[in-house]
Image 1 (cartoon, helix red, strand yellow):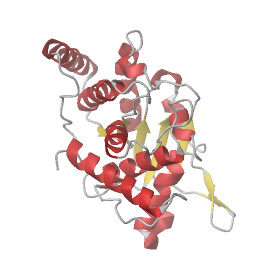
Image 2 (cartoon, rainbow, N blue to C red; image 1 turned 45 degrees about the vertical axis):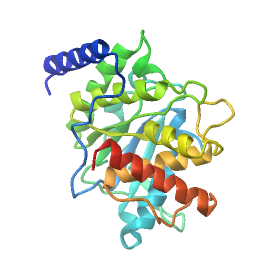
Image 3 (cartoon, helix red, strand yellow; image 1 turned 90 degrees about the vertical axis):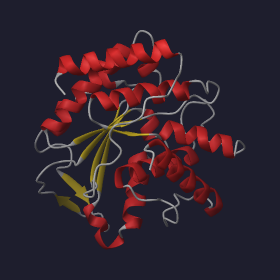
Image 4 (cartoon, rainbow, N blue to C red; image 1 turned 180 degrees about the vertical axis):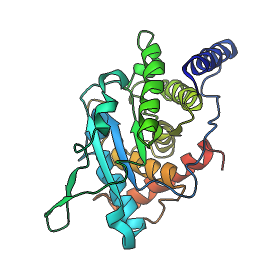
Length: 271
């Protein structure tokens, strides 16, 4: 979508939301990446991604457990800056030749130099935890959602937005973030991963399960695992329920989080 039309779309959608007085009412236009789901991802974000040995490693665990015969086909990289928003990242530089993804390590810890047709199938982008809804930063969110999407597409990767979660003591952020990310996803023809909605659902169902670190913002291991299950479901269209990768979490808790993730993805995409 050209820049001028994208900006007009976002502005009109925002005015309609404000006039209605309702939150989180916009429906995502893009609800699937299609049958050829991605096998390589770059996660571009901040500490919400890198807590608990990084979300990308848990998504990889789920993907490889779901498809063990082709586990070597799956690859993910995390590029994070503490506290960062969209505008802190030089996304163009992450796709430069002979840099990110140039080599990796196999199961025997041998260095493998990769020969890649393209670096990543998808670029998963997350803004700072308040940026999409902050009065002084939400315009920056809109601008750089578009720029990041355009850059990813230029390099053959599909842009995907990661809808982050509310702070533990500010549950009203859930609907606000959901609305902001959904509008941005629609404006940029990008899939949106509804992780924030999954947090809210899990809390409503099992409030005694702690999804947060002590600061009430960053994820506990259970929170990271829940978000990873949502990423897996959104990208592949497959249920994580019954997946053998549990991230060291006890099985009843992991199964609960798997179910919450799948229910959330089904509801958000209205499948």
